[in-house]
Amino acid sequence: MGAMIGHGGLVAFDDSADMAQLARYAMEFCATESCGKCTPCRIGSTRGVEVIDRIIAGDNRDANLDLLDSLCDTMLHGSLCALGGMAPYPVKSALTHFPQDFGITPVTAE
Image (cartoon, rainbow, N blue to C red; front, side, top):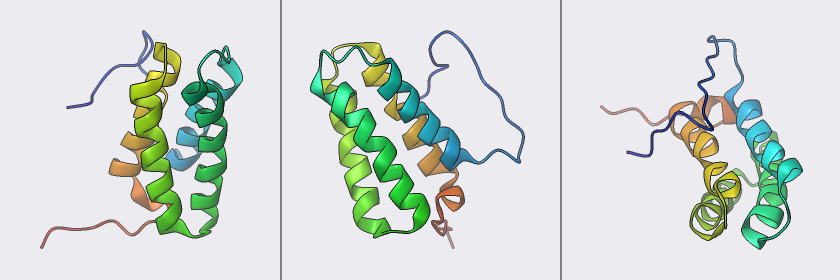
């Protein structure tokens, strides 16, 4: 299912929260806190912030969404600790459930 509470806590936001900025913050936090030992966390989180910024700006959005998805998978499966391995979860969740905050038109079932 991919659901989790996080690093020992639960964070709640009202409907005015910008989920793209919160996803960016999750990646930025990982980049700041990374010990630097493994490449997926050290470089992936830094590049993740840059890619999210490009998505929000509308710069080649489809290609950057694909890149972010690949980057998140690399971090999930290649990071040595939970910091890098869990940072992609809020990003992927925000993209799935709040695509409009990234400037993406949600797909609706008809």
